[in-house]
Length: 314
Figure 1 (cartoon, rainbow, N blue to C red):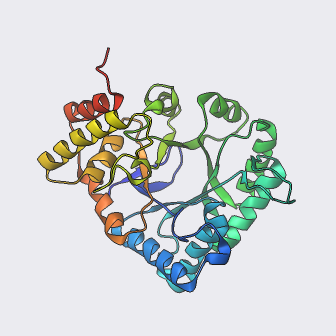
Figure 2 (cartoon, helix red, strand yellow; figure 1 turned 90 degrees about the vertical axis):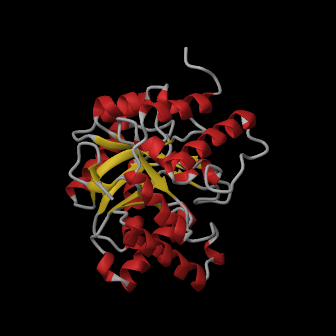
């Protein structure tokens, strides 16, 4: 795959990222089996071998087990170490942590950020995290407190660059105003079933600040993939079904498949959207890389956008 630079950093990555949220096959560590670990390692190997040089993690994925499986990969196959940019996220705390009555919440306190980074480094078996992101906005976030944590992590060499995830533009501005270095990514939900970022200023801010937008769930949780249907309870099911028909028609004309066109559609945007491919199927991991070589023209891009809107442009 072609390589691009993340934001204003020196990190060079593939135009598609591999998302490791599902590699543990379970969110309950007690259910993690040796077979699941082996399958997770196989998924990671398939992504490395297919040309992905950007891997997306979070401390909560599999309650830490997804990061640990990546560390196991490095133990078993040290030839993969240092071959890719490793990103992870912090800030979400599940209910029951640390006390049984503790609520599900977000925590961007300096203490939690520093502690979380240490735990991720141990699980991933790394000396430094390439990209560290705040996962979901903490309404109680103090930009000065976060800045202290980020500066400490950077000066200690434990983190190279920082970004955010699911942040509105106002939250990005508030945090960036305190930092002596740029935030390089904002990871948000963008796909043909969710167009908000095209009109709410998120992608415009990325263009203005030269941040790279990362697209989580670029295939809408899988229903933009081959042989899948729009969920029955989707609030715009008829519109999305019509959009998929347009998607399939374009894919057939271009000699490819629906999922590849959906990924290429995102990658057409001038902000340089990087879709995060989250499948654990080895064939899907490989097939998705075809989007890197597919350049949609403006007419096909707008055909899909209008179909996804369910209305003509003004």
